[in-house]
Image (tube, rainbow, N blue to C red; front, side):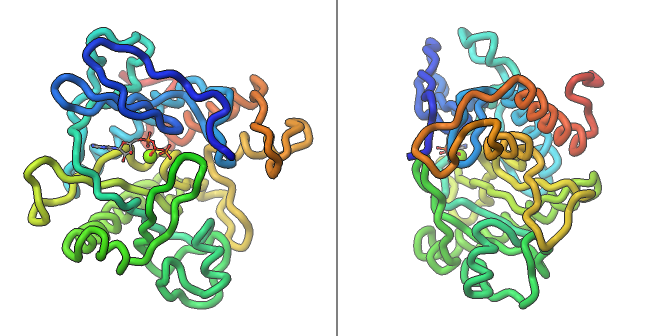
Length: 308
Ligand code: ATP
Ligand code: MG
């Protein structure tokens, strides 16, 4: 079963309790009851967390997510408290840490899609719907949808795929009011982000948000945007220059990785049982360049030559 090639051990830091090791991030709780999210340089492809890390990826994605939270601050509250390095944490955590309010999470992956691809395309080709929503005929892989849609999913365990669910199912699970808030917030944030990205030559094809509520907050309070937002790990970004509906679009960040993994050079059989091999230095460097590039395109800041 896909998953980790090498599952990392949690780091021992006095005052922090390890909660969870995700594919890419490690989660701790501090003594104030806040969540400490540490973004590693791990990268996944074809459902595997690869044995080779991409230098700076964790810092780039942490900063990108913070940049987005700022862009969205007038639309939606978010969980960020600070980026302070916890006392006693390894110096290597600097720049990868986000300290956040621990929320009660809404157990739904809030997905917005503005373009047809992936699991949406599979369903469309079968039923001409996505998550049960009827769509017009004639759409192809990569087509822009007439309007963005909310296509919620339920979270799956590592190595398994999230499962698309209908809006009605979400309403049954979290209540009609919260479901309506989820849809509204998801589409509002997606719409803003899509426009920001488009102005910078990047297509935000689809993305996943996670929302929660603070202690004592109820359905009258706005949902709080949590997790990471609008990074290549939670979103499909395509280059606007290369976008051409009717064929699979190449994911901006993973293109180099996937091309190499599926080439004879890697010697790896994607459909076999064996884990993927270590990446050659040249593939690592080019993949790192992709993260730097997406960061620069979106924020306008050159990662390797920051203005500050
Ligand atoms: P994947 O790599 O597939 O995303 P994962 O979701 O298990 O796997 P992470 O995304 O690294 O791993 O884990 C982050 C976890 O933290 C998720 O379960 C997410 O729902 C949760 N989370 C994010 N923000 C908050 C928050 N403010 N309060 C409580 N939980 C949060
Ligand atoms: Mg996650």
